[in-house]
Every structure is written in C-alpha cells, then in structure tokens.
Image (cartoon, rainbow, N blue to C red; front, top):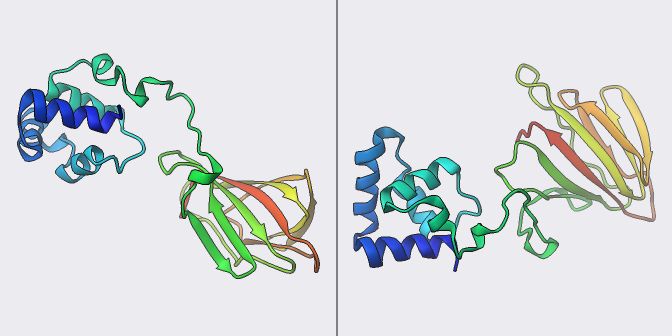
Length: 196
C-alpha cells in the first residue's frame, strides 16, 4: 500500500472525516504552521514524491497514529536514506537550450544541489549562464562521459575529454560547446547550491 492511500484510508474509514475537516483539525492544532489544504490534497492523491518530516508529524498527530504505525506496510517503510530515480522515470525534466543542446535533470527537486546530464550534438553549444553574484557561493562540477567539451569560463577556455572533471565558481559567466563536427558529447553537471 502506498503511504498516501494509507493516510486517506485512516482519515476516511477510521476517523470518518472529510479532507476539509481533517485540515481544520490540523489548523486547530498547529495554527498558521499547519500544512496547507492544497498540500494535503496533493499528498493524498499521490502527487508528491517526498513528504517533509514536519508534514508527516502533523498528519500523524491529526490521525492520532504513531509514525511507525503509519509507515508500517507502506512503500515508505523502506529506507529513505537513498533516492533512486530510474532513467525511465526521469519524466520531462528537460531544458532545451536549442536543437543541439539539451539538459535533463537527474535528481529530485527537494535536494539542495542540481544534477543534470547535458547532451551536445556536433557543434552544439549551451547559452551563456551565470549564477547570482551577490548570494551564496555557487559552484559547478562537470564530468565528461562521452566525447569532448569546451568549457568557456570567463575568459578561459578548457578542453575536456572523456573522464575529465572540471570544477569552477559558477557565478562566472560560462557556457559549454562540442568542438566535434561528427560525434556528440555528454557530461554530468552538478551545481551546488542549486539555482534556477
């Protein structure tokens, strides 16, 4: 049984209250800190991949069920130390720079970093990017998986080959290009902290 199904089952079959009544109960207990009605709707319908511990605590309190009992027999009972995202389950989290440069997000949104797989067709290039100058210290790590990639960072140009890694402060103006006229290039780019 999925966690959202178990929450809905306990609310409807045991407490015998509507979702609006359940939300009002949470508001009475937690006041302005209560999880929103919209979030509860999304959670019960299974639209949320992850549930914050604070939200789980509120739901357990509202259902009058210990966390261990709520998770028992659900998919969430399994370890949540690691998150696996299969290639087939990545969804449509793509950023298309142009017809020759496409990046696909690899990690869930709740993580503090951003990891993408960038594919550059022959002579493909991304647009210039620059993370905010006045905020956190943004960094990127590039790991080349296939082909060769030119990384242009500020006024420096670095040719990266398969297996090469490059790290740099990403608040510098930068872009990536594939110098090959025949073969595509692929790399993983990890940005920490993430910035959209």
